Length: 68
Image (cartoon, rainbow, N blue to C red; front, side, top):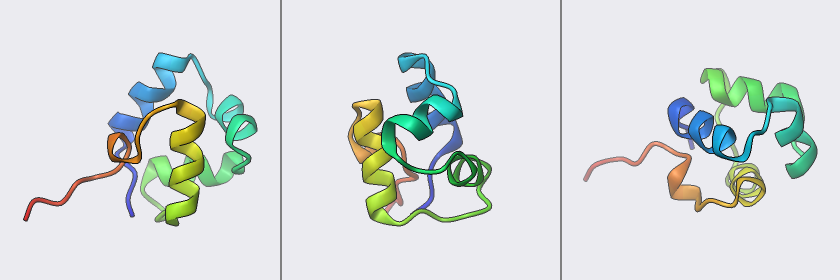
């Protein structure tokens, strides 16, 4: 799964979280969050779930949705 950089930036801004604060809230390393946002690394579903929960948004609000 790929995180949509714009969507995660918006969700983080709404909460007022830096990458470090998000990392602490969701127990995912700051390096991983940075790599996911840059598109260097794909996320496991459980990682996206942790991030979404910390940001209080549904997973769908953070990932690219494929058109069928």
